[in-house]
Image (cartoon, rainbow over all chains, first blue to last red; front, top):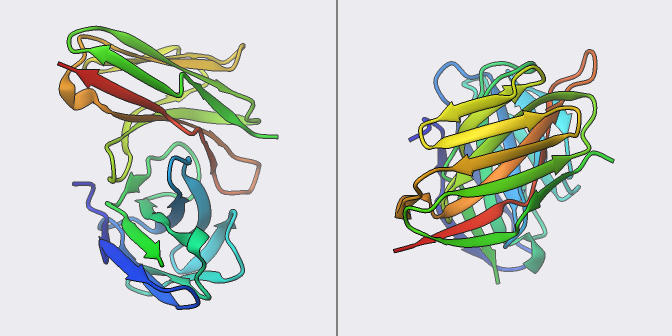
Length: 114
Length: 115
């Protein structure tokens, strides 16, 4: 158990819908990262937040957005869902923004868009 | 372009055998290299993290090597166990001055250990 929690574990929805994925980082970690992993693909970095502020952006679509709240939990919002958005979405947390630090990954949310 | 290439894509070995997974990268400026183990449907778990000056690092039956000159790394698994069946992901990080660390992920090697 990494200490990072994600809910829900599974999510099934239809095209065009909007969903929210939630992540709680390890106690004391200020950075939260979101990743997408499509079937048989590598992890794709989406976005990073540090202490409530956006710190880095990766291959995140305009239909996707995220935020980190004062209690440091984070939410990833996916809207106008398409079949291709079906994937595992992972959240990771770390204590520092830069330098040699380790990211701890949550168990992931499996999103299926029908 | 910053890239991480892993080989082989998949590997099947018998329990008790050793194996070596390869990682080549073109990430610059290099910060550190990590190996993660990812069980099917679960989040990746860190095995090792190595900086530029580290050539070898072990974690139990896992030994990672790094050649920063040739930009290659390997992960050697000794006396494999059924529980080693997983995807092994090589991740290289870079950090430009004033910016946060960025990670480049390989697609992973899927290892299957058969009894």
